[in-house]
Picture (spheres, rainbow, N blue to C red):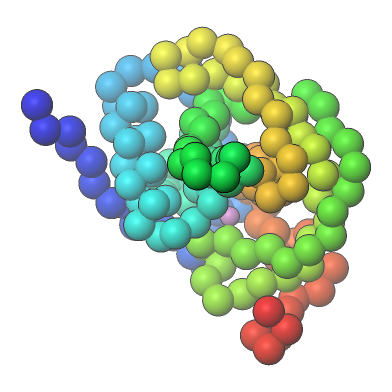
Length: 164
Ligand code: CO
């Protein structure tokens, strides 16, 4: 059977949906799976490293994060996080950050260097996952989206295109 996936439109910073707090996911049904499949397709097509449900107009606590810290020769993969919570964080990193909802704009944001998240998978099973470096930055950035927070409000300064 052909898998039905569709690109979803990514809303940008003018859209009020990005500033609202998202609700918990309570039903781990085919509708959720379709959303996650579509978000996956949309993330890959956009060459992003993370995507949160509100970015496709859905105010639910679901995000995708690309794990890019993989051993040489292995494929990067997407982690699906439903109702995620940061349960541990340590260290600090300060660097350039962007967002698919804020195209062409980058800012300097300080994030934890290591983040451990507890979340549910698409079937409702709880799991824990750790990220470091870019993955930790991404966990932190995407979970902010679920609270209606964009990186621009946390940036100590925005970057000129020449600085990138
Ligand atoms: Co973002």
